[in-house]
Each structure stands twice: as C-alpha cells, then as structure tokens.
Image (cartoon, rainbow, N blue to C red; front, top):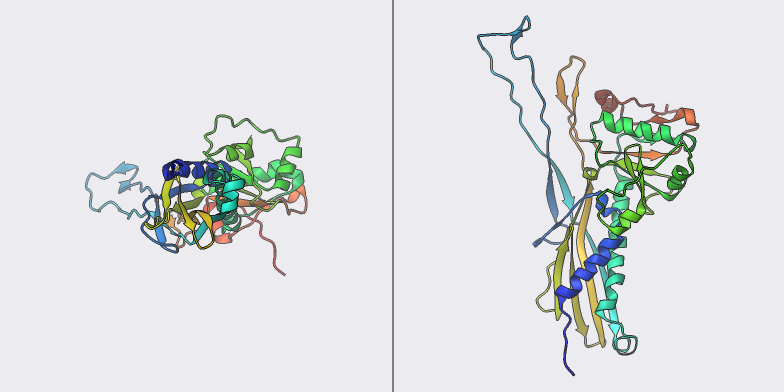
Length: 346
C-alpha cells in the first residue's frame, strides 16, 4: 500500500475556515493575531491606541490684534498614546482521539474533524467576546422601555455623540428578546446592509440591518433582554499561536484574517488511537480613554483617570415609556455634557 501522509498546509486552512465561518462577534472587535508568538500562556502584551491633542488659541492678542512684539513662548503639550495591557490568559483547544476501529470501519479521518473542531473553537472565542461585551465597565447605561424603543436608541446615540464616539461603524449587539422587541415595533424600519464589509458568513446572517445609524447584530452570547452599542475600537481581541513541538508526527501553525491556530496530530501507540489537537491562545480587553473637557472658565482640561466611553449598555428596565433616561458617573457626565438621572439612594 502506498503511504500518503496528510500535509499540514492542506489541513490547517480548513480548520481556520471552519472556525471563521462560525465566528459572529470577533468581527465586531479590533482583532488580530500575533504571528510567530514567542511567549507563553499568561504573557501580557501592550497594544497602542492613538492619543489626542488639544488646540491652543489667542496667542498674545490685545484688542483683537496680534502683538508685534512676542514676549512669551507658545504653549506646548506632550503627546501620549493610550495603551491597553492585554493578557493572553486563555488557552482554547479541541482535542479528539480517533480509535483504530473508527478509522477502519467508520471512515473517521483528520479531514472529517476539520469542521467539528473548528466550530468548537469558534464557540469558545465567541463566548469570550460576548462575556467581554456584557462585562465592560460602561460609564453611561441607558435605561429604556420596550414601548419606546426609538426613544431608547436615540438616547444611546446622544450619549455616543456627546462623548465623541465616531458615527461610522457603530454597532448594536442585541439579545434575542431585545431583537424580538425591535422586530415587533412597527415604528422602526431597518435599512439594508448588503453593502457592508462583513468578517464572516455567520456575522452576515446575524445582521438584521441598519437602524438609526447602528448596524444591528443579534447574538446568543449576551443576555436576552440586553443591548450594547459600541464601535469596533471599543474592544480588543488578540490571538496567538502556540509553538509546534518538533517531536510530533504532523503539525503546524496557520494565521489568516486576524486569527492564528496550531494543529498537532500524533499516534498514541499505548492506546492505539490517533490524536488531533487544534488550539490557540487568546485574550480580550476593553479600551478606556483619558478624555478632554472644558472647565467652567473655558479652559481645556484632561481627565485624571481613563474611563470606558466607546460604548453604552442598554436595558429595558424603565418604569414607563416616559421615563427613559441615562444613568452614570455624575462627574464624567458633567465634564462631557451628558444628562444623567441617577436613582436616589434610600
């Protein structure tokens, strides 16, 4: 019999394709892969986020005219980029043992495992992305009502506008109950999003359309009655490929479209079984900003601590349609001009 070994370069793209086709939320993150990652599980990496600078004006003006004699220096400031420290603290893997009997009689092979193991990894990464979205430290929660969904989404838009979140690429991730409420509201009309660039077929199928400037995506990874409005830069997802041991019979790594993975296949002679393992390291994090604001004297100030402003969470807990409101930190709200109505304690 002619021995025909399975080449990793043929198998690995299949694993990646199966993984990518099932990922819904990854395409909504600032995602990427650390090619040729030399570290280990639990290592921390730093991702740089572009900073901002202010504008000075009225350099030595008297009576509306610039002075001819310049006796003072212009004011300089220091440019600093924001940094997100992300820990590659999770190891997602799918390990499958194929008994000799399965290979001989059931025709189970490495090829047939590609979609199965790819989906398993997709479920894990999707779940991690959903948990990151739901658990983010939102500064301004929007308390809406099912009978006033349009008003609720407009409040979310107002907050994002006030804090300076770009209008482009705004996303609204909704749970199944929130989706049902949107679809049942005859006052809301979804615009087609056929022309959008989508990261995967799964994300395309989960997209309901465009609504009030949001691309609406339904996800089973968030609470049924919740919704989250954000831009892709609000969350970071990074994957890394574990090194391939030189001692394995077959194996290799593959990276494409921001996701890297490793495949290792070897035969366990003691248990008379073939073993296929596909894995990756990953980590997710939120992106916080040190915002700028004008004080009561009209002077630009820089906040002392970073806060999460690139997204808002939305619930439907308002007592009535007339009581839709925004809650949040009073100090940050005052700095940025966001109107909040926090519940009175006691």
